[in-house]
Image (cartoon, rainbow, N blue to C red; front, side, top):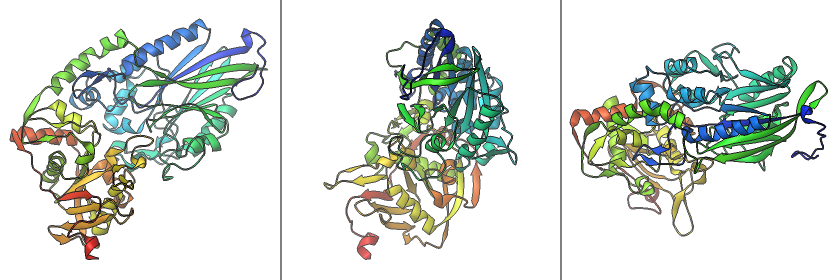
Length: 552
């Protein structure tokens, strides 16, 4: 018989062959139920649907005399209003996502970068409520190589075969996360950690199969090996397959890509997208070789949840959490006078608008900084209607960001705006579109900022690096050597999104309150907020009167 590696193997009898199914979820981001919280309309996603699929796969494995191993690959407890309400409003009960994984008999979970968003108290509580271990070999106690969460791997034994599950996490977390949320931790290089632990699992513990579950993605095209991003170490999946001997399967995530049916350096890989729209499945055939077992065949696939009924048990488990979340979401906040809705995302990002100006104004008033930037995080942001509830707040500001005021130079400011301007591409006919690097492998609209407190024009018909054609502060040209205090979210202040010009800058003020809470409080205190647009910035195609370019 020939396996999918192209090698021959002999199946002599049922005692010499084992069937193992790996089911991976990743980047669920708190998606328990198949709904869109902005309007409660149904969506084909969520863990309740994954649970139905998982039960089917487990039954199939049992009927075939095989084993199913369920692994969550990280970014589990953050991302929806349900997750936010539990973490920030009522953290007393057990974490609902953890309870759901407990109920479905998960074998392990891996720490994702968003697990740290609510701080270590919330995370440690969730870990303590888990009936499964949380794995991450490269998140260690500061100054040591001791895994912080205690268990970097788990070994499952089945009919004499030892199947090791090793967890790894992108080490780029300190570039995004609030330092208070990761105090006492070091994040080691994932590739170097894998070399150490895979060798240990194979050599010292005699693992027959090593499955690496890595909350990270691929830094290169998985087919050609060509770089697909700046080699920062955020994603090291390609290197793991190429440089670490002994990996039988690599489960990935973080990039929200949908990858299956492929191998890198002979290693089967899978990545199941995000929000529970599909599960990643790897089907292994193990064959006995003397006293040991080895992978004779492996195939990966994605199983979509579209059309699958949600699991009644998970729905019942979620019901009290969901009811409390819905009551909170429908809490009236105040009123908007004027138009603060969002209809056209591209237009919103090309000309000053009331929604973005409002967020920047709240950041400026809260922090005392005279300059601010923020992003329109997703094209699904609806803006604010005349009557505002908490549902509208969390539908527009979807991340648990806090604020920092950092001190940057005028040169840094210009560099950041040039980075912003790479968001756009213009074709020969003058049509504007989103640069693929902000859309592939996942949408990164959150990495395009709009500023208040300065006046600027971006001419995106010009080459990248020379698109800032107007940049003034209070009517005067921004001095490249002068220092300016700017308020922004903690992700951006740490250099997230390749804004390296912000890394290591002095922090003038740290505001630990979630921005969504600041927005809600601002409206609550004022009852009515006027929509305003001062027109301080715009994006153009071709020169405009009064630009720096025309004065050169």
